[in-house]
Every structure is written in structure tokens, then in C-alpha cells.
Image (cartoon, rainbow, N blue to C red; front, side):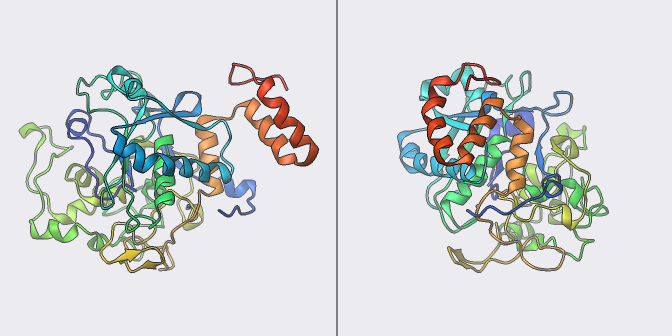
Length: 376
């Protein structure tokens, strides 16, 4: 989850980007169902500044031994959650030494930070594209990173599920609910006129229930960098909480948690269909916030007393999903493509019986060194 996250100060100042942040039952799905939209990083270099992981492998390290001890087992368990739900076996994670995670290598690896048992969560989506402002930074702290907490009182109220959500970000998936096509046009910036979320859709966007909302009210709003004001060094007049609840850019620059809910600028992400209604939302996605994420109220596993921030169009709460959905898996396969060798491997493994047994013996000896082909 991305709630309450401040991205690296250097990265905010130099590039204007933030981290993303911060669910095993497999339903029968049809082709039509999987064709519904999902929201992923924009890898078009003329518009976006992100790229996918080479060879579908996340190479990661830890900032220190304490983070390694606290997080490594849970990260691998979160990866297994994705694999059990059908993510291709060629999507791997690989732990590397810290010497491979620093210097110029930092832009091609993900460093994990442990924020303790009461900390925050945030993850950089994908990798910075070649030639992007991020890669041109000389600040050693500007890099792809993931901040993880072992708390069970935030997000999905489960360590493994929270980590699986963050891995989705690391691969390049955005929040399902931040797709601008789902938000009503009128008062919320970046919205494209959808009939799912927003003040015009039965008021199911309840910004006032965010944990840090009252702090913004008591503080009289914020003076934040104005992305639309080239004068005065990019700073404008004081921005009130009403604006912070309606504009992703202002909320992001003001370090206000509404940034983890509000629709993102269209150019930041790619959606794979044109649907704008409740039927187009993947309500089972591990990348959609449950209604109480980041809200006021107490919560613990099996006892979620948090107020609602986003609701479904019928007024019901968005549940905590216990695994990636089949559309989440489809999004990953669409974004990265599939290896012919891995597809063949998956099909044979699913066949079962003697075929699978013999295949498992033969496959390690027969796989080639190139991604798209192999001798079976």
C-alpha cells in the first residue's frame, strides 16, 4: 500500500515522482472477463519514464542486515502467492549482494527498507527508463526502493498480502482504483468521466476519513509546489484540504495520503480497455485498496473497524482480497509477455501424472540460454 508515504526527498525534488504503495482461490474466468482493463506503467518513452524488469526478474537487496532478517522470508512468500495464482514461472526474484545494489547498479535493482512494526509501505513501480531524469540523478539515495512494514494493523491487515501488493507495484502495476477512467469528471482532477468513483458518483469518495485529513484541516492546508504555476519558483498560494482531496499532483507534493486514492494523470499509466463502469473494475484485484485502508479507526486481523474511504457503486465496502486476481495475472503477462519455453513448461506441469513427472526430470537439462526458445 502507498498510504502515508513520502518518497525520497531527493527524488521528489529532482523528478517529481513518488513511490506506489502500500491476496488462494482461483475462480473460473472467461476471455471476456480477462479482457477488462488493468492499469500498469507506461513504458512509452515519449510519455512515461518507466521500464519493465529485464528477463522478468526483480533483482533486490536490503539496506541492512536488520531489514534482511525481517523481510526476506515474507518477500519470498509473497512471490509464491503470485505463482500459486498462475503467474508464469519465468517471473522470478533474485536476491543480490549490496555491492550489486549501489552506485550505477542502483537503478537496475530494488532495495528493501524495513520500517518496523508500525511503519509505512511504499514501492517504486517498475524501473526508471533509460535516459530518464531519475537515472541522471547524482543523489545516491535516488533509486528504485520498497519500504515495508511488518504491521498487521494497516493495509490488508496481513503481512504476506501487503507484501504481495507491493510486489505488484515493483513489477509495474498501479492501484486499480487510481485508473482515471473510473472517476467522475467535474470536481476531481485527471478524472475521465467514469461512473464508479468520485463525488458525482453517490459521494463514494470520502476523503474526510483519511487518517491525516484532520491534520490538514487544523493546519489550514499547505503551501505546496504548484505544478501549474511556472512563476514564483513553482510555488503558489496556500492550498486548502479541499483541493488536496481533489488533485493527485497537489496531494502528492503535499505528502497527503489522498495521493494513494485519487486518479493519476493519464500519461503515467496504460489501461488495456476503454471501460469506465463498475463492471470494468477488478474488484478482486490485489491492487485495489479495501475500503478501510488508510482510514481512521482501529483495525487488526479479523477485526476491521476502520471507516470507509472508497465504496463500491452500490454502497458496499471493497473487501480485503486474499490473492492476486486472474486479471492481475493477465496484466503481468500482458506487460511483460510470456516466454515460449515457460508456457510449454507450465502446460506440461498442469498435465499431471507421468507426463509431469518425466518433464520435471528433463526440463532442467533441456532449457537453453535464450529466453524465447528451448529444446524439450
